[in-house]
Length: 155
Image (cartoon, rainbow, N blue to C red):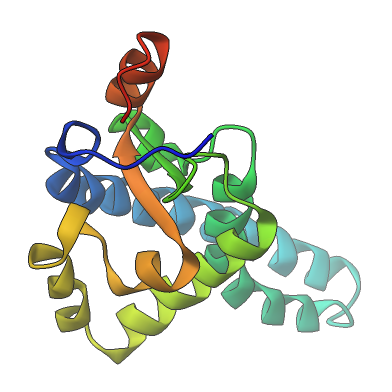
C-alpha cells in the first residue's frame, strides 16, 4: 500500500529534529567518554598494546545513528524523546539498514560540509533535509503517524 506524507505528519518536525540532534550529541559524547575511559584502562592493563582500539571512537556517532534508525524504533533516542520516527517516504515503512547508512553518511557529510546545507530543510517540501532526499526517508511525528494509520487517514 502506498501512502503520501501529509503536512499533519511533518508539522513541527524541524525544531524537534534540532532538539533531538542536540540530545543525541550529548548521548554520543557520554558513550564516547565511557568508551575512551574503558579503552584507556584496557590499554594500561595490556601495557599499551590495545591503545589502537581508540581508533574506533570516530565510528561511534555513525554506528549510533545508523543502528538506531534501522532498528525496531526507527529513531535515535533523541528523536524518540522528541516524538519523531524515520520512515520511507513512499510507503511509511521502516527504513532498511542500507537506507539508514545512506541517511547517516549524508547527515555527517552535511555537518562536515557546513551546517548551512541543513537550511535546505527550511525550503524543501515536508521539511526534508538533503540527506533525507538522497536516502528516500522522511522524519515524521510518531503520534501523528500512529493516529493517522489507526484511523486510515493517511492519503
